[in-house]
Length: 126
View (spheres, one colour):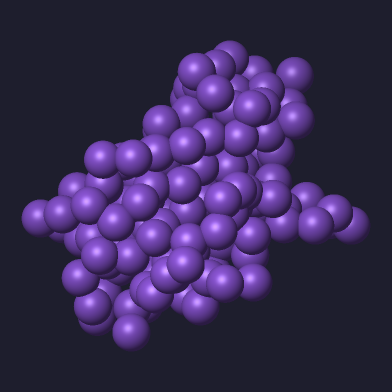
């Protein structure tokens, strides 16, 4: 099992940057399929970025390609989401999620992810 705790959210102006962190405790998360999702009130949770076990393969939803980067620090057992050139439409609650066993569905869907953090709010003003 793995326990996830996000941090790093906040309020920024459009064009600014934030780095979200997701600290994992318990199991070694680098063997997990890890993803960032986001959700706004009244909408379904949507995936933002995903990193496959081993950390070499990453994918991004179209709306964040070229602006966001998912990465992990195995020594710190921490997942990151670097968000640059933020836009008001990036405003959401951001969650990190982990899935231990495959198959790994792509694009990622929330249901197979068994472990979730509590979320961190990102607000981008115009």
